[in-house]
Image (cartoon, rainbow, N blue to C red):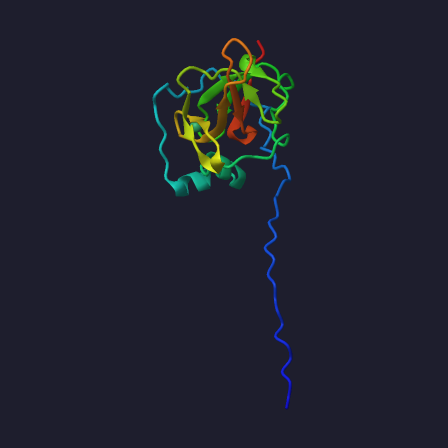
Length: 177
Ligand SMILES: [Zn+2]
């Protein structure tokens, strides 16, 4: 009697590789001083693009965070340290709308750029119950791009901590006189 070889048991181990490598947003701090002639999007004006258009317009990492509510690894993004980049404006990296000013930024120690207050009318919020947590998601009011979350443990005067993915931001330094 011929013995058949024992069936080879192939165990497929799904190895979840957490890509914790930092994908830096392209540095835009050079040659990018605020231009006075720039057409500022008006508060309340909306930018609605199709999913395909966003994919074309954004880098893969930006798309993942802004359009798919991803979170970049802590201490990886630019703009984490509050004072490093000097005075300026933090714009939405998806649509350029101004979101935060540098004078509302603080070091939260979390590894994500943090602000205690957005520019009025520029940041929207909604309840986020993903991952079994009750959090408040914040997004660009113009393009709905996901920015991060807001927590109630921030500094004075607002007591808020807007914890933002650096990749969702584009810093534009204040033009030197
Ligand atoms: Zn936007």
